[in-house]
Structures are given as C-alpha cells and as structure tokens.
Image (cartoon, rainbow, N blue to C red; front, side, top):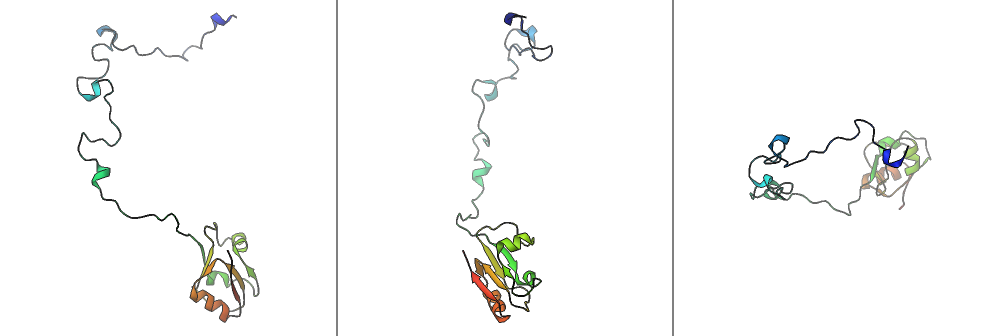
Length: 147
C-alpha cells in the first residue's frame, strides 16, 4: 500500500453541500437561505438577545439585589446537637465532621443556642451566639473562640 492509495473507510466522509451551482443541484438560486431579508444577506445574523431594535428584555427589567463578595458563610451547629456527646469532650470542626454534623467549614464554625445542655463540654469554634455561650458556661463548659 502506498500513500497515494490511502482512502477513508466507506461512509466516513459525506459529500459537502455545493451551494449556488444551478437550479438542478437543489441548492441553486437562493442557496438554501430563503427569500430576501437580513438572514439572506452575508453577515446577516445578529447577536443573542437582539429583538429587532426593540429594547431587549434583559435591559427592560430592573436590576435587583446585591451579592456581597465578603459575606461570611459559617457551618452552623445548635447546642441541642452537641448535648448527645459525653461530658468533657473536646468539640471542634474536625470532631463534628467525623460525626456527620457538618460537611463544609466555610468561614468557620458557629454555635447557636437552640436546645439545652446539661453537662460540661469544651467547644472550639470561630464564633458563638450570646445565648449559646451563656448556656455552655452555665453548664460548666468552655466556649473557646478560635480562627
């Protein structure tokens, strides 16, 4: 076999549509572009969202809202979820992740005060709500703020 004898396998290559080669070709006269108008001309397509010169929907609707780029998103846990652990347990993000209470850290761990706690726990988190801190310390535990 020589290089000049190489051919693609049968059915791998389709014949290209030859436009504007006479009426009998089936693609003559308007070359498949229909009759007149912007889309029949060369370069006659407009950008997405163009509505024929009418003010586009994207610009007719008002701008709404604001997304802060510096917003802090915390992994949140309530005291009620921590009450099931035995007394004097050291609780931090890794411990909670291992026990399936949180998934992602985000900006840190935040403890909220929903629920009751009866025994002392040492809890390390980025921040605590005022109620949570009071309940932890009332039970004899420690609320340690870490970064």
